[in-house]
Image (cartoon, rainbow, N blue to C red):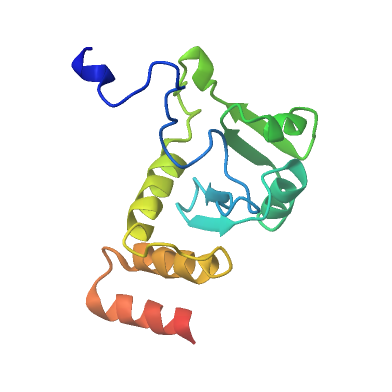
Length: 163
């Protein structure tokens, strides 16, 4: 018997690795979808948890931020497909499955790096409840807004946000 088969009966199926299922998270599965929105004009960033990652949720998120013409930069996630036919939005997207990660100004690198920082910031706060996720994300957003501001300006911004 080789070292890789020690303690394993040959007629048993190999055990599965990991505790999570593949694919996007769901609210019911205790891994709610979190959307990252970046305004490329002002560089404002919003992190919004949601109960589902479908077209209606995305439309609600974008309705508050809609201006005269709104260009939405996305990946190839199928919930974004209806924006192709919508006159209110211009959709530009990258197709990761084709190995395309950026095409001139068409990329979502800012959203992905911000989401990565969010996950890293949340990791010490183990087992954040999905019902308490919004306050944690607001605290992270405030922390990112204060980053790099001088002392007096940061204090004023923090007080304005808290009050």
